[in-house]
Length: 230
Image: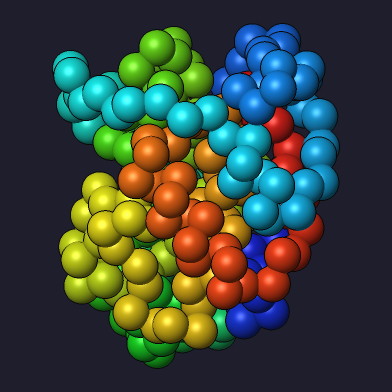
């Protein structure tokens, strides 16, 4: 259950619910073959977590965004996953009208440290983009697993409401090619990226691994707690 969207103590969020699709019962961790169980919570220091990620070449062959069914309304409350994130991340809650129309409200876009007062100016970004997930292992997943990834409200770090401009700037880039303009947020961004890759057992390519390692050297080696989805 998604219970908090606190990111480095900068946001306080409301609780939202969304069930995710079932995933395989277990898998091998790419680093050292450690056993993984879906639903298992693990706590690992940031730099160790980076070292545990499987290193593999990326392959975007066959990718289409529609391979990930996203913005579903799993709990049938009239608000899809995108709107659930926007509501949950509001610093001042918007008014909700019919069909989950949102008016008013205040948000902080952490990518670029911009205050937003119009929900229409927000994009909800997959912090690890759908194309990046495809490249890093999701191409082999079932449609149900890809849908669960694309609507992952159970992991507070997976989806984030940011300005449309910052989201367009990021596009499908990984940390080797893009970092948030708000420099003070970069270590949190890196930590969240590693947490999501760990949660979903996604690989990293060599450039990405090097970038993660280099950036982490300038960050506190904080513990990352992750509930495994695969």
